[in-house]
Every structure is written in C-alpha cells, then in structure tokens.
Length: 338
Image (cartoon, helix red, strand yellow):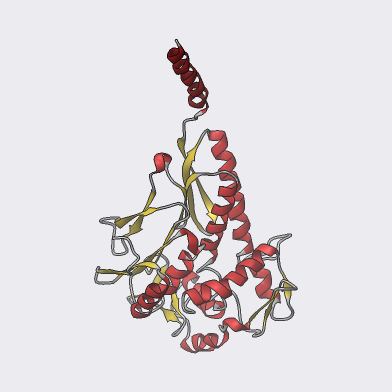
C-alpha cells in the first residue's frame, strides 16, 4: 500500500508540471520601414499575443535607433546624427545617453577592431559616392573631389566629451556616416533588450544582419546561410549554426552598386583610396556572443582591407571570417566553422 501511495503521489506531483507546460509555436514578423531594408524576426512563443507584444517592442527599439542614426532626416523631439552633422562643427552638441554610447563605441571599439577601415568620420567621402549612386545618371565622383574629401576623415577630429556628453567636430569639413556600423549595433542592442523582456527564442534578420536569441525548442541552434555572391544557384554556399548571442553579417559588392562604362562601383569604399574596394566579392563574419555587435563593423572593414591584412587581424583577435573571391573560390580564418 505504501508503494502505491508513493507512486500516486509522484503522479499527482507531475500533473501540474505537465499542465503548466505551454506549446511553443513558431511566429514571424516582417517590416519594410526600418534602416531602408527588409526586417524579419522569427521565433517561438507561447501565444500570438505574447509574440505580438515582444515584436512590437522589438520594432519600437529598432525604429528609435533608425531615427537616432539617420544622417538624412531630422525628427521632432530627437537630436540625431543629422542634427550632429549640421551643428557639431560650430559648437559641441549634447546628445542622449544612447547616441553618445554608440559614438563612443564606434570610435573606441569598432574603429580599431577593423584597423581603421570602418570609420564613421568618413562621411565626406561616403557622401560623394552616395550622391553618385542615387543620381539619375550614376557616375563616379570627380577625382579631385574625392582627394579633397579624404583630407577630412580623421576620427581624432571627432571630439567626444564624456563629462558633458557632447559631440564636436574639430574639422568643420568632417561629417559622420554610420552606415557600416549603425544597423549591426542597433540589432545587438535591440536583441539584448528583447532578452531582458523575456524573449527566449528568436532570430533577427535586419537587412542581412542576423542575430540569434536563445535556441530553437529542444536546444537546437538557429542556422543562417552565407549568400552566394556570384549568382543564384545555389542561393547559399554554406549554412552556419548560431548559438545564443551569435551574429552573422555579410558585406559584398553585389548588394548596392551602379555600373559606369562597364565597371561596377559598389558602396563599400576603401578609405585609403577613396574608391570602392575591389579585394573580394564578399566577406562574411560570424561574431560570437562576447563580441557585442562587431560583426557589421568587421564585415565592412575586412571587405575594404587586403585579405592578408584581414587574415592577420582575424588570427590576432579570433575573428571568424569567410572571404569570397571573384574567381568563385573562398578562404577562411582559423575560427570560421568548417
């Protein structure tokens, strides 16, 4: 009798646990008005209502960063990078905690991580190529204009005052452009905030900046594909697994470009020459959780550096990198997954 009572007690103790376990269903959300790209979030939640609440918060966070990092538009009630570019040459501009932390991270972390090839102070050069690309008749900027702009990209002229939380341009011709880092940083900060709110299983893909939150049910890792830069068959050349906090970002010459006299001019600029980088077709960076959003900065920077330099950086810092060459061959750093 004692054994039967003990067994019955164990069954009764287990029943509430089973009843409380909720089925995790797969949901998704897609937006087209963030960072001038397509944003897709997929993940698992207990219910549609729970998923909607989480993704609405994710959208709000991304929208806030989109406004803060916008260099082309002003927003009422917000001091953003458009305002900084317009005013910081005349006097220091006080900015929000979020924007100041971002600029400090760009200068102190992202810039040295990519050996100076990812430089938010390079707006004078990048603006020339942006305007050329967006023109009705795209053509390379004038060589003299490029040479003149290259004289105004010294990141040390970006003066950040921690005590006053202000931004000042020591060079009045300098301008900020955070296209190489802003999206990746925003995705990382947004993912961290979502996890703090209780989102446990999701994959954020914001215009190719992919970031994993947790795992799939059962502990299975998320996977992401490395896009084929040479054509559509196959669409992906490798699938990589993403653990909690990992990011995958790819930069290539096939994404934003124009052609002039039969030559492709991509949007990724080699700041040693002022012209589009031509070392490789594409670079993929797999950043582990402890690198805090560096994948975006590194993919751009390593695309704009000779591979020999990039390989040395990768070896020194344990970056996981895949280089894809115009002849459709690849090479990888020691930390890139086989």
